[in-house]
Length: 181
Image 1 (cartoon, rainbow, N blue to C red):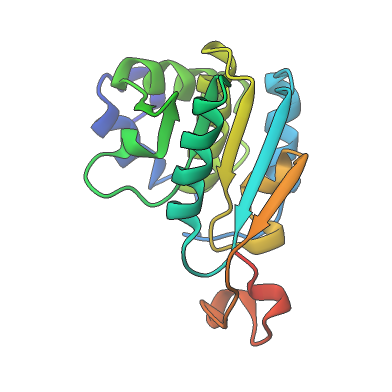
Image 2 (tube, rainbow, N blue to C red; image 1 turned 90 degrees about the vertical axis):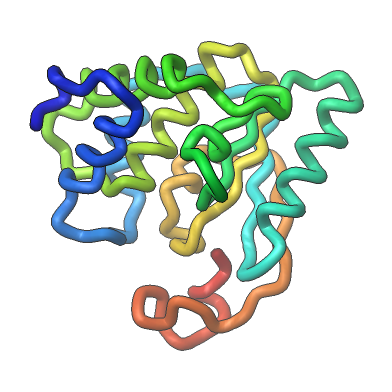
């Protein structure tokens, strides 16, 4: 299946799972290259949320606080509970299938065959959705990759770190410093 024949979000998500020979491929080089090709404007404020547990709750609370203060927010979390759309929210509302598909198509149009993981591709698509919806403040949850996670391709203005413990040691190593995601 090629990207040209993908019509539903489920089609796209199934295709994304086939793009990289690795489920996890830590590093920022590929994401930074594609992000540069996307030429997105940096929003006014970016906050990263990292840690082992509590990131999603912390991101949701921060998103709600920022919206309450009048910011137009984009919030990116992972994983989702029921629907992929939950990962990408504008002002607390999940992005539509059409918005996500359009963003995935945009990422694919500049990827030029560069291998991206499912999470990396989705992160870039979220950033496209946020720009198209003119989010001025982004709350980005760092996945399990810690400092090498795709979210770190976007320079934050602030960060929140929840508790950090040894987790995903087979990918991140055995010390807490490398597990901060």
